[in-house]
Amino acid sequence: MTQKVLCGIIGLFALLSLAVMAVSASDSGYENVAIKDVLNKSSDYLGKGVAIEGNITRECGGRGCWITVDDGTGVLLVDLKPNNFTIPLNQVGNNAKVYGNVTLIEGKKKLTFEPGSPYVIGKKVEITGDIKQPLVSTG
Image (tube, rainbow, N blue to C red):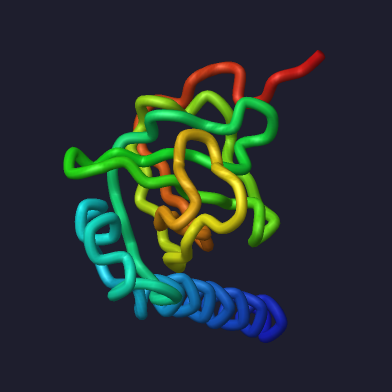
């Protein structure tokens, strides 16, 4: 093997190692919690990083900018728009693990959630389940 190829392989390996460490680091600092705990003790979680996991029960039909997640203990709104990302459409029924910060709904009602209700501003979403077609709506 030539020295350039070997250096390239080593460089690629180093970059991949750093990427794996960055992903692992991004998951740290989030406390795994049940949705009922966020709903019942929202003041304990305000501004803190949480990880919730459950079934996607509703989604933004236009761009995938919000979802609702039900873990069997409660349902929580996850807003993705503040962090400028979306998820693929047609994910209702799939499981999601959401990492984000807890905040309170201010001003007017969001969907069926009243002002003062806690919700999560999502920073990362991992979705598992069957990919349903189409991933995007057109027209």
